[in-house]
Image (cartoon, rainbow, N blue to C red; front, side):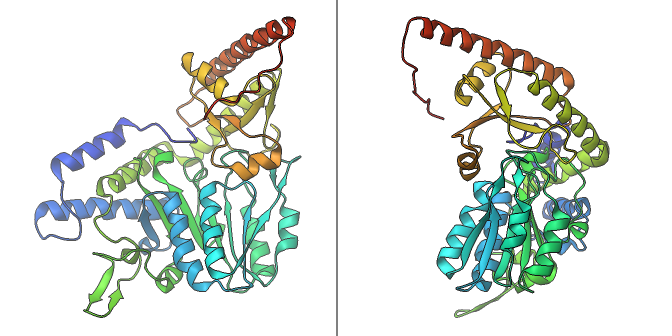
Length: 405
């Protein structure tokens, strides 16, 4: 569920209803279908703004996902405001989507990209090292709210306080909230950041939709991300002026159905209650951690089970089995886990592994699901262990073949 969430019938029905009863482009027609489509589309923006407690609906920009949201900030705000000698800070635990855009922009602008190392013992970024890295050269800090590999919940209060007190006066803070917004109550005003990115498909919404939250004055100071229809104010033969946010960053026909579906997903989550979801997942995640700790030959990555600030996802490695093989055999047993580097190659290199396996939970999972997973995991490890014993008895050399992932 960390890679993507399952979709409630409530959300699927809302998508179908749009296509059956309100299929039209938005912001472009005076007829009733267009008005209805626009109302549903903009209603989804209102739902997102309320969900993250944004001061204004104009601060919610629809994107294709969190990746585009991060790229939008990098290629508009950062490209305009970074200069040689400036510094951008990310951490070693980041998803590639929160590393590569900053590499590209720093190369273009002459700024320097710096990386907070991972604290291998704690299973979190080394926040003491982060503090030491801060100076008036730092113009941008972009880090995950919750790690998609380690499951650690980063100390946003401390991060914001340190940046505001030690970095450049105009330094901006961005949080990648893909693994937090679906699982806990997130309040952008309480966080104190300047930008936040989230993905719809991880929170019971459709694929191909996400959002960027940004402070309205900052968004309106940024140049457009793409040119085209809807993002303009006036167009002349030799120049154009641009609409204010959010329209400035939503050129062309948007992902109307997907946005409406995301709005429905938020309605669904609100009906359950984000406090209830967070509490239940914390209990479920702790249970998963305890059960995995009982399995011989398994090393869990990230904070220990005793740590309160931990998400309901666990990445792990096994002594005898490559994650790809493990995932394949568990799939045969009807258990789906993720295997690979989880788009976090720098983190895996720092931890000394090329890949890991990941079990992730959402509110629709149960302790019975965890028990089944652990049971099938133990059976799979026992099977591979027996193969290793047979090969050892035959005096065969260890096969170092690594399957393609």
